[in-house]
Length: 311
Image (cartoon, rainbow, N blue to C red):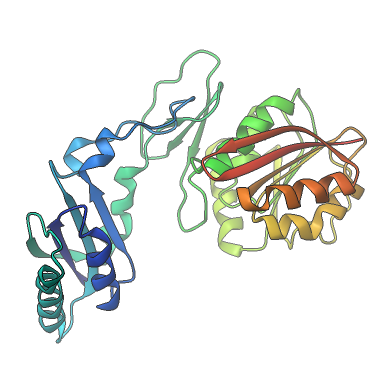
């Protein structure tokens, strides 16, 4: 299928209004290339964000891109977008460069264009995550995880995932039995295996995630340590692991905290992430009510993760 990319070079002031125009015109989403991104100060204790390419950003202002299907009324839609764009002048909104351009792209090119933004990232003291299409030179004592995210959630660099891996690095000493609930691409299970844990059970309700996890586990040569199952949380799982890790929503964590407490071995660890700061106290109280001791709270951006010990 053919798609048309509409690109609007504008000002920072007009960004939100133009994004809204594109959404109302049928675009499923927008890409915002902001010149200020290259100047932004990032919190990078482990170098989480780096290797931004200047050629991917305008020298000034903002470029907003959206994709529209090539059909019989495409040009009419584009003209409506241009009219709405120019109408912003009546609200004294600075349009900046004000350049609107159109180009045609193949669906396959569009579906894979995101790859250029996914680069190797050092996310903890030991672990570097890289996409399978990037070559990296492994340093001494460095653990490299290669991922092909495919259609499953998780490139391994989201703050909630980063905190989980940092927590696993803190608690794994070697040969611990681990259950990864909501495994996504399998990155946490792979990290656990490469840190020395075994055996590991990776669970996800999403069939696509299960297949993605199996692929990534094979790519990282840890399939002998990890089993992957399609499963709803911890239902029907009869194990007594040393560690349970879950990078999912706070509401979901709250729904099975009691199951975690019953299943974990004494002095076992529950690593819970995916918690927005507004839910931090609620999840903390639920964990403590189930007899967990919060050993450490990790915070990145607006996200919280707990390392909780069963006592």
